[in-house]
Length: 154
Ligand SMILES: [Zn+2]
Image 1 (cartoon, rainbow, N blue to C red):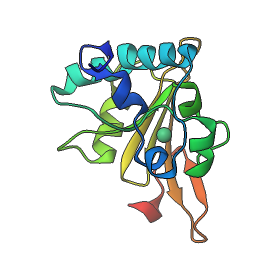
Image 2: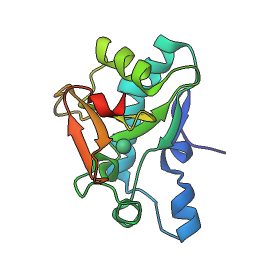
Image 3: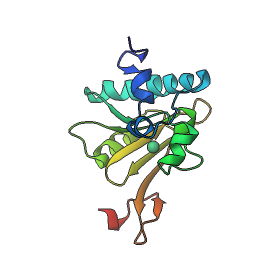
Image 4: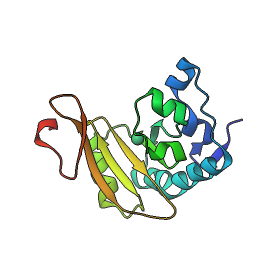
């Protein structure tokens, strides 16, 4: 039986990673990070599902340091603390989902519209910066972050 974190989210979906499975990387969170994942579901993902009335698809939730390194994640990624999820919702573009969350009262810490493909959202019980960013690649392929949606990625 899957372990429910909230009515619509399971621990298994917050931890599952195709890459971890493929590369044989251990991706089991410690209890403190399971608590963070539950907080993320309770404060952001479950209320978001309620607002939208549709399933929230979690592409990436918890990442062990090994997994984060393997996929080239930021060395300070909140995914490693169970505080962030990369999500998509059917029928919403990444931009539309970003706007919806940004214009809501959801207590997110950081919200990133990533490469016009998905939305990264984090929850931290100690701070809600409401830091909203766009991630894109510059002409050399380097990942950049901007407060304003860059023209090049439109
Ligand atoms: Zn992310």
